Amino acid sequence: MKLYFSEQDIIDSCCVFATRHHGGHPQDIEVDLQFDQNRGFSADIRSRFAHTLFYEQDIVDSIAFYLAEYHCFVPEHLRVDLTFSELEKIGAEIIIA
Image 1: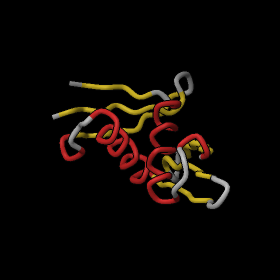
Image 2: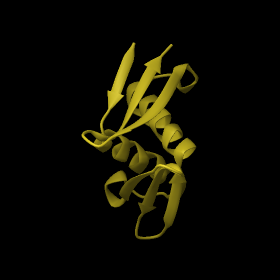
Image 3: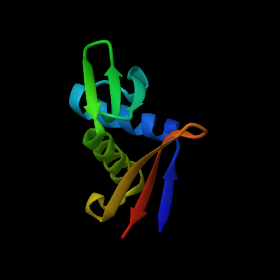
Image 4: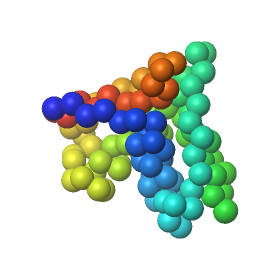
């Protein structure tokens, strides 16, 4: 099975994952996703109490965590590939084994 995450889905995943580390509620987190040809994917994570930078692996982990917490997927059975296109912006393709 294959799932596709939009940029908003990835932002939601980062918010949920960030609350695991910083506490609070997902709606209290602000996320700015970024893609750079040389450095890859990153996410600037901000809350009232913390400011963190997620790198590509952190974003992948946040998607796996979100799918495990909210949809009962087994993270070890997921392969997450982040994608970028000018038209669709940042997205993710998730393959469930």
